[in-house]
Image (cartoon, rainbow, N blue to C red; front, side, top):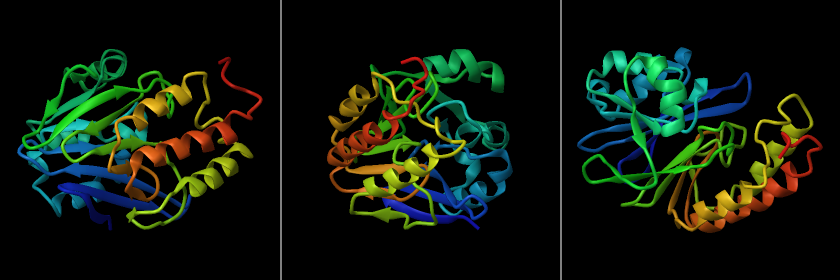
Length: 247
């Protein structure tokens, strides 16, 4: 069964733990006049995530479905959600919409940009393009400006069946997980490019209060400092790789 936790006002973390790989998959529901789901989850995970959403709202009332980049755990269950929520619309960056989603789901996505807001009622969302961070040229993150929640996708990824929300740094947990990945077949899970630090510093300037983390504990506190810590960890661990995708 999913574990549902309110990590910020009207932001619910719906977590499914896979012990086989020691990893949490977290999906975030924003309860508002036009409810928004960030991360659909894998198709095989759909019944559990739907059950989690149903603890908070009627799933049929979803209005917006968003994610960072085109990947199964990000948007694999999109068709399933659109089938049960007739008024829901996908929302993603321009590259993701034009290259993947409009054809994949057979309907046009709302294209998000850094120049306009997506309003769901009380809450206002702004999209920030983060190409190749965490991975994929279509990658981006979503920032809720009213309460200061940053939906981070795979940034801050750390393993384990961990607490839903913490108030202390997770940087060392991220360092441990990324270091383990570097030693195995997941070595290039997150590429390190000449733009990585620049993008992270830009996200830090948003001064988020809550970091909604897809894999691992979410964080409440000085989000700017946490992102700067992440930037150090990523440079220390990932910039040492001998293969840098030609960057």
